[in-house]
Image 1: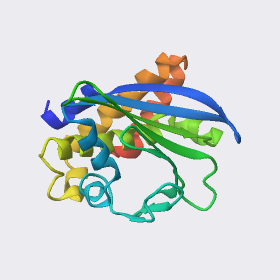
Image 2 (image 1 turned 135 degrees about the vertical axis):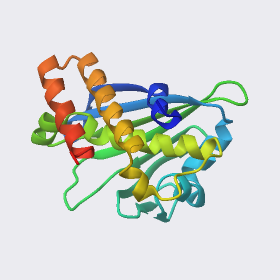
Image 3 (image 1 turned 60 degrees about the vertical axis):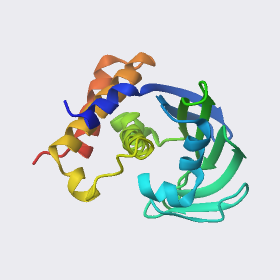
Image 4 (image 1 turned 120 degrees about the vertical axis):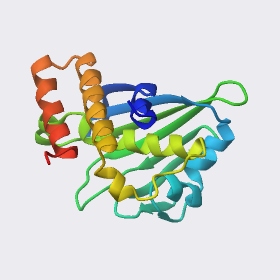
Length: 210
């Protein structure tokens, strides 16, 4: 197993529900610890130049109440910003996205370690959740945390991200991510047969047969 694929093992995942104004939302939570000071992790998650190095280019008015846009991806409003511990944004994609928010929470462990939590809370169309379960967004967030990990350790993103996405290493990473989200889904109380079907659909989506 490569060191990159092994990063899957450093993330704790949870699946749940939460009541929001639009009804019942689904939640996916990722947690891991970084060997970096909380100020450094916060800066990596909020400085536009650094965000572009490990995630995607971002534009907009990046302050409380302002709006952001990730190139080719989600955009929204900055709802809460409490340096260096909490960032909450709406996470909207497409013409009719519905309720969707992302919270990043940081907790210092001493001077040089930080517990990082990312929770995505969204009202998901039943058909999509029934087909893919939490892996639909979870696999993507695992990829984001991998990017942040490589950034914080100084390794940097792959020189050719598109080529890496098609590599055996990336396919193994996404397959294992899909399986781990299945395990988290089952731990939340989902029936084993439902979990197996969603893992299969998610894996086939992210890792299509060659």
